[in-house]
Length: 241
Image 1 (cartoon, rainbow, N blue to C red):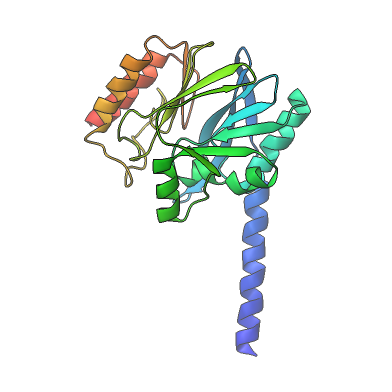
Image 2: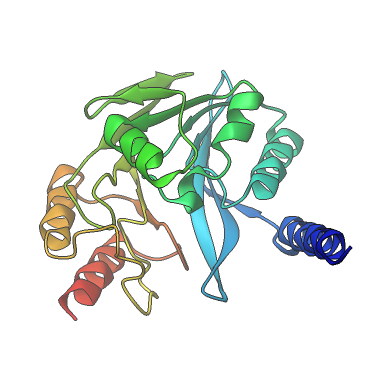
């Protein structure tokens, strides 16, 4: 009887936790430039709530999303918000590294018929770490041309993680840095257990050389409004501490 009671309590606690997780965070979206938008979802790490940024671009064929929100529930919120605002379906998702704040919604996207992509390195890390996996992979830096919009992926070297990539939107000169680039308001370099802090500064310099003078740079966390130069400088400053 005690075992049965304990099992029932465990189910109730689990249910309450799940309900709380699906109801406490609400995504936000904001226009960036042209047909590009920034979305922000939220997650909790060591009892601290963090905002996490992604971007999406509206094309004539549908919407392309960079990364997924930090939970399945928030991924569904994004799907709903995009349909309500743009009357378009999400047709592609490209993830920039294997962490949960980038991959949590991949299975939902696949269920909805979204084509999900990652690098081969990210796929292998997802498998090794038990994270959600994209359906398709690219083996090298790749240019996607979707609905007349070009998106270039670029691997600069190890940094936040060993598999981190950035994405470049050449028409609008937007650089999506993901967790590889820190906000100009970031207080710390963040979680680095899966990264390479020693190599990270050189990787940042490669991005600066590859994509000079971006109009916008979007970091993976915290405030995203501000100059690209300030984002790069803050990232390098934090790495030097």
